[in-house]
Length: 122
Image 1 (tube, rainbow, N blue to C red):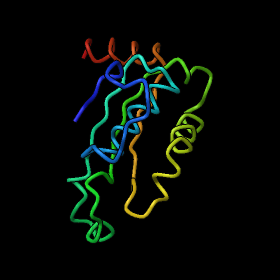
Image 2: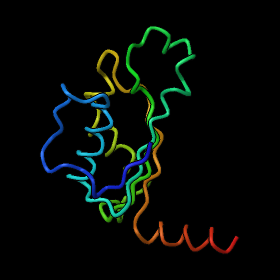
Image 3: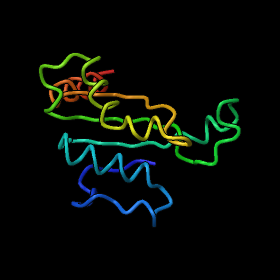
Image 4: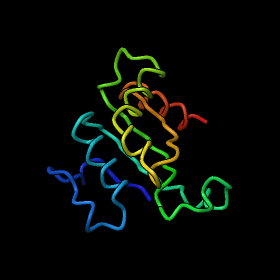
């Protein structure tokens, strides 16, 4: 599943009434704090459901792949960008049945533009 950044609500999502509370929270928190110019959220949990660590998990939201383009990443090296994201979701990642893994692509608008230009050449 993918979601454009502009679809995030202005108030925190009510996780009690959603089938995707973690995805909703990720979308909301990233949009509010990083103001991304591009945001895609993929729920890859189904690809990992057979793993031993996931066998007893009742959550369908354990593994996410995020593509985030934000000016907030300007001047930050990759480890700092990832640390920033992981800190935002530390509660959800430490919760029983919470988020198990996040695969991150964190780019500045310039890096995104360069990447798009390069892929159009190839």
